[in-house]
Image (tube, rainbow, N blue to C red):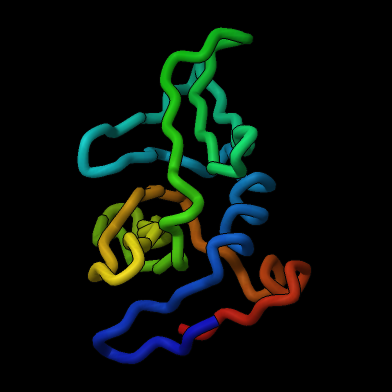
Amino acid sequence: MTTSTADTPPSLPFSTFWTWLKRHNNCVLRVGTPDIYICDHELFHWQFDEDAEGNPDICLCFGKTRIAEMLIEARLIQFANLVPAGDPDNPEHVLVQIIGAEPGDDPYILALFLMSHSPTEDDLATLNCTFRH
């Protein structure tokens, strides 16, 4: 994991974030890309899986019905940045930016996850990763 500085948010390997996310699916408030946002609702639940090519698959479901779905191209993913969501009423909320790029291109945000909290040191210890603020 990368150490954060004043200009650089703390980051995690995407695989670490994805494993943690699957254990905290009830903590997702919103998922999005530059083109789409999927918002949580008390009647819905989140499912996280991978498709046949290993691309992360994010689904919002009502019972067994998929309400919305988003795929992230795994080949583009580089890492996950964790930044404060900037909500003064909910300071524990964290925005997770999935950063990636085509080879030779500048990195950009592939996807965003608004979470009700960030991974704790204990969470990351179970995933064999450290988190520095």
